[in-house]
Image (cartoon, rainbow, N blue to C red; front, side, top):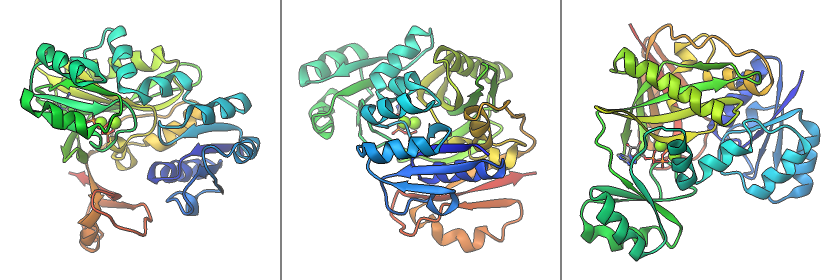
Length: 348
Ligand code: ATP
Ligand code: MG
Ligand code: MG
């Protein structure tokens, strides 16, 4: 069978490798860390730096197609790999999602609603942006933020200097605070020939900037459900995308507002492992391997709970719960805020 190259061997890479294996394909994972979570479940593991061009060349030579579990692949790494093998999803999706400013402009150009925003490189920029956008607002680093890291809330103009300091000199973006009713996300896929499929949107609850729970069905109207799927399709098509994408949305009285997009399988799509015939990991592998997409219909009500840090203390109890499917990532070290696993509970 074909060999799928996966950049990044965290829990997403691990679950992608398992899905590839189930389809009779082989997963070759590339990760700079010595023992990444995907390491024991993939067919081959390359442990080398993103800058190691010899290792990247050997990796590309050993695989048929390359995909990734995280969007922050250095540009030079991508340049080299792209010259050797198809990289799916492609460069445009990475460019757009690596930088929050590029991302917001792309979404606006598509006619989609976003939070009001402004690029921030100095205190002058920040003062001018706050005068226009108002408070509350959130200052975020443009690049490399996740799980709410690299963000500072601004409740009043007086908070501005401390917020700017928290960016540590990195280029930033100010976003107006969206007064949302709820947060949802659409996990959608586009195949090599352009077909699009979307999973039912899940409702997301964040705590301290980290996803805590995703609940299906979301408490949204049929119109919002349809609108969410359609806008995800527009994003995928505009990017000529191949693979699974997570689209995070704020639901507001005026309609959905796009928060951010992730060009990969997404934490808020883990419920599909128990809720659908074809889960997001298989769907992504199908897409990047050039196979037809699978049926994304939801056949159960599900709640996904992330197991973060000390939540691992509850594993012995969770494992005995009827209707609960436990997924652990095999991480040996527990740290506060670290995603160690998740549990999908079928709600009947
Ligand atoms: P992820 O781990 O999802 O990539 P991230 O670090 O990229 O997270 P965001 O998705 O930008 O962070 O923000 C985390 C959470 O903070 C959001 O899910 C939302 O709850 C809240 N948030 C972020 N931006 C805004 C905003 N402009 N208005 C209201 N709430 C916001
Ligand atoms: Mg993000
Ligand atoms: Mg987010």
